[in-house]
Image (tube, rainbow, N blue to C red; front, side):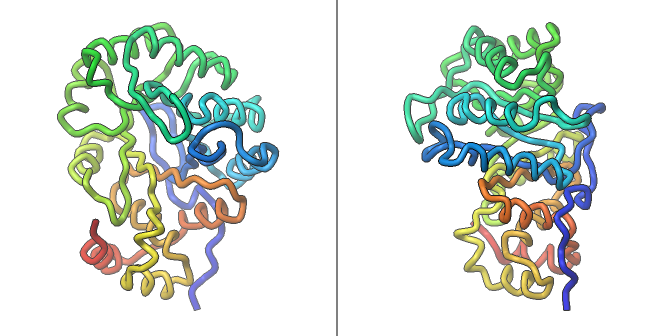
Length: 290
């Protein structure tokens, strides 16, 4: 019989962001703690706060959010639940997407906008400096140098500690690194959607954290025979196997599965302790494709 998995984020091991922020490699993405369409407050605000507190109790010390989640609501709830923040807790947020309405996302990389939303995040999160501030999307209508330039200014002013990018290719990462250090990249990536394999490899080679959003893709994964067989062998769920595969994929991988339910949170975090064999990792990679 397979051993019972215990929800403990520390079982995933650690990664150090930017040389000075060491976190467990099983994080938490807070986006689901909002209303439908990532718009407005969650149906149960107190339950959202309980989920965040439970995540920290389980050893999660990396929480990802954005000013556009709500908008604003997500950051407010994090501060309500966790401020004053425990020592070692890293909260990463993002700016650069505006929200005209539910389910709508519009890039805005104008320097004045990025400065404004960064300062808004500081207020909502009750921080003097944001540990990791990520450009949510590169705005094709604004010179790239202007977008990374204002992030460098905010860093120099002490308002952000480290800079990350989201939904970028290797060439864009290299261009950004000509202007400032990049410590993380957050792209959509999971076992069945691996269009960013080259970025994962590049980040691994360069010591840059790769933060996969939508790491589960459970709708596709649950029907895969190989995945089900591995899950059964380990007494785990397909989602737990998918998360374990990500952790094995790269030493700089930092998954941030999100949920609004404590039971699901505990299930996700327990995947940190699931050890796949090399054969299982290869089999999953070969049989589960986009």
